[in-house]
Length: 425
Image: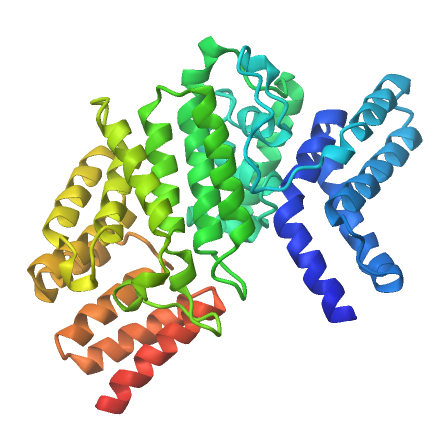
């Protein structure tokens, strides 16, 4: 019974955390209170569900409990009747509690101010231009996705105390500046869209390849990111980069069923069973990408989608157009230079022109001191050395990557690779 409750709570956290917190923020305007009461609700659920069983609608149960906790806290703090009335209004929508994968049918097409999705409001509030871009993204990942401060710090490759301070300062600024909790009017959307795209992109990435924990894939986060990006695409239908990001997500997500084996271990792209890829979703992603590129305003998300489309449309691994992928990564590096893009380009160059060419680029990246603590840098070096039959050096690089890896699935994959070359040696 305890195992069933723990699994139900874990699933509820993945699926419902963002909705619960966003709903409480909408009602109270207090970010810390919302997070604390949401956490309290999960703590209460652990005991209650063990005693009474898992409720039919866990999300509604948790929302009600969190709301009641917030009401009690506000009453004790003598906030006043007006705020309590706002809490009462919230309960009316409880029967319409939505699942993360649902279509965004609650958009008022006639008016952007008619958007009633609390999670989208939350993203736009976090992405107010008064906040620094990294603070915008980090705050949304914390409140909407429920990522811990260490997880967000790893995603940004910064120390945990640094990220904790950014989150505190961002919440304080929202409170002190009176930043409104709403989707902005149409004339303000362009200045917020880029930051919102960054949030949705990182939200999807954390679901597609988690930064820590037992599960490499967190399906609830990828589904939520896709749902919110679809909703954003309806708000700004002519924004090419929104369509590009949605295409990128769909093309990645189409391969989800083949990425892990039966025990949850990572399956490399070249070894995946392509019959398990979702061909309908690939077709939708490619069509979206063509529409976006046809507008003549290419951007980083469209280029990344084009790279993934090269993989998704290849009949098999040997048919992959690595020359095109390497060229696209070069274009991406010109638009958004970053060490992660440089590392991915090195992999593509290695596939197109041989492992020696790729290794030269990796060594340049290492010499620059970029990506400290990023396990994929030594893992890439290890793979290229393995392909060059330099097994001693490859083994050392695999051990370094294994030491830095943060998910169980990645550790098992690297352990297998290390065992393969040490056995051969």
